[in-house]
Amino acid sequence: MDGWGKLQSSFSGLNLGQSANKFAKGFSSSVQATKERLGQVAPDEITELPQEYKDLEARVDALRQAHLTLLKITKVYESETYDYPTQIQESIAELGTSIGHNITSFAAANLKGTNLPAPTPTAPPEHQHKTLPHALGRAATNAASAVLITPEGTVGDHKLGKALHGYAGAWEKIAEARVEQDASIKANFLHPWQGTLNSSIAIAMKARQAVRVSRLELDAAKQTLKNAGPTKQEAARIDVENAEDDLVQKTEVAITLMKTVLENPEPLKDLNELAKAQLMFYATAAEALSTVQGEIEELSVAAEGEYRRETTEIIPLSP
Figure: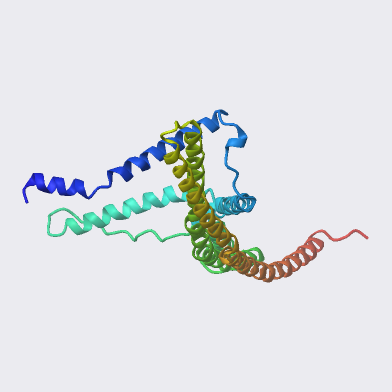
């Protein structure tokens, strides 16, 4: 077959009439929507959708808004720095260390076999989680070392140092629980919660859009029938009947999909996973802090008693 024959064959496979009809309907529905928006269509000329459909629309809108509202806040769990804004300064310092490590490592590897002295590679910077619990643990550890380590390099018997050491240990446990909480929330809440928005709710919204377009096409067809001349009335009447059937079908589909979305138990399961992950984190935090607080209180009482005894010996009470 020559090129012209192939071209003719390709055109013969196209339903140009159907494409033209689809384009005409799309244009008519757009015109109808514009007229309604501008108030050029009387209210009684707009096809009323079933009350059941309108009630379901309102409930699905509320469900979608609930998903968006909670997702907007809980997405902070995707970034571990949400409770520790000063991490930016630490990140800059670590970047400098990382650059220095990369440069010395590169030089050490590429200056071998040359007359130039090769620098000793520096150790790569240790990864540090950028969360408030991790930061508190690091700060308390450094503070404990500063208080406990004597100028001779031995470990002293300082009550504040011991308290800081215990406090640091508690926050290390909390920090570990915090990382586990965030990972659980991302996997068991955020991903499925977003998935519901992108799947079942989105499909229901598309079905509603199809209903809207079908309703506009029906009302546009009614206007065409109303203004049609005698020779075109029969064709216009058939268009109206077909548009009515299409609207009924699409409305039934949309009602079914919206009911399915509203009855879906998955969002409840997802919310339960969110609460469960948070509960485990706060329970771990409460237990760790309760234990260390008791220890710190004992050290505090002992230190106060010693201080009072020493003060009394230095400054004896007058008779």
